[in-house]
Length: 41
Image 1 (cartoon, rainbow, N blue to C red):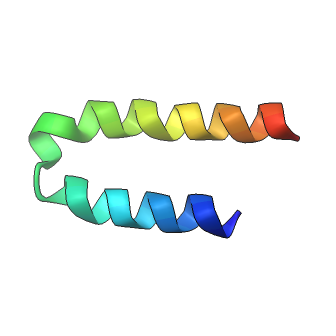
Image 2 (image 1 turned 120 degrees about the vertical axis):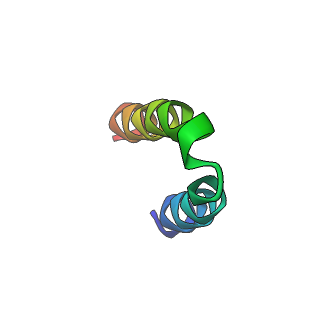
């Protein structure tokens, strides 16, 4: 869990600098991680 949380935080900080270009990609990326968590459970 901590691995995912750190990854999201680092990626969020990176994408905030390019929010207009990558906002949709970041949303899709978060959905994929959430889906992976459900699969792992």
